[in-house]
Image (tube, rainbow over the protein chains, first blue to last red):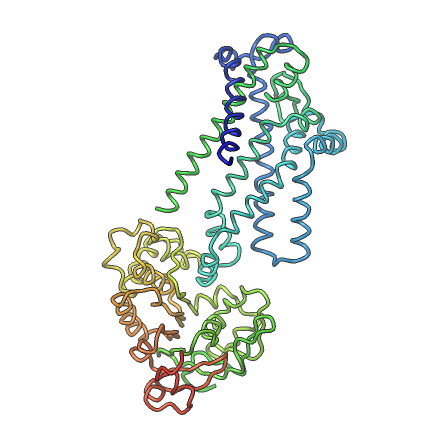
Length: 265
Length: 253
């Protein structure tokens, strides 16, 4: 029974990926990847959407990682379990359950309108950052929790201050776990549509600054398919998106293993 | 305060929440001697050690009354700088606790935190500390390999070297040989006897035999109380208290 469930899960995943790749791969050429969309995406390529996806994800990760890791370190190392830490944890748990369209609405009202950033990479990236923050906090907290108590004790016993202990013992040893959270954040950012369409727009022009509006690959896919512009192009975009996520995950995994091997000597 | 006391406990009582761990301790620990702390499990030995460099601060709900003086200075004074106190009073734990770093980086962990960054100076410190902990010959050719690859006995001597690298005044050792074979135990005991020329040592031995081999003075603890304190000879040959005698002769433990 259990293995049926496991194989069913695996089967569904393979089926979805195979379907997208089978339809999309034949169209996935160097020209397609390096050319910008033309005729609303009916022809041309997807280069500007790749750039948009990478930029908006980079903004989200750059903002959310230090904030999230900082929060986790604060919760684990700087406070004892109490009302404040429970409140923060309750807040992040609630945030984790909010649908992304709500984040989109918040981002639209706050970043786009109130702060006057307009539909832009910055607005979208900041919105994504608030969205992936809970994931990064909770995975970083878990990673910090698994560090043996003796490491801390040794560091303090050798005259370490709290900050030295965090910088030299806690963070290096929690890094693999922290990276897992960041990767989950990358995955959500790359695949997100609802929150971005409200905050970064859907322009497929090449961005010129962080204040330019953009269209991400996921949104490009959504618009091509939804508005019946070109199913072939949609599949090709989907295939590129899947390959991008695979590439990011593989690279991160490789880095992680190298780091762990160095840590263990 | 009496001449020659490095550490002095006065009416020191320690609580974990509502549970009492040390009860009204009055005790002087003399300079450049090995003071051993005897007693069955849960008699307050580890708490006594950790209260001397305030590692007890890391425990939730801990509180105390009374005083502990280091060279006449109250170490629970709010003015005291904890990193400095812990550099002066180093501690080796019951299980080897190398950090996941190289042998070299483990030894210089403390000195680096105290601000020493000069490569030559650090190299000197490593050689001196590893020699003092009788580990140098075994590891001198692989200082950059991971400390986690050493054997248990080597790891524990590395932990001693790590404390020595800070040139502390007092070294606390909490059953440092509990996980080790007789040969490693012998090596550590020999280095302790060598070390007491320059350092004040407080040792929780892992059995009475070890205490009798290395101790200058002995304190016997039971249920958080100091039952009896005296020279090793007094305690082992003619204890004044019946409970001490029962414990030494192995009637309980």
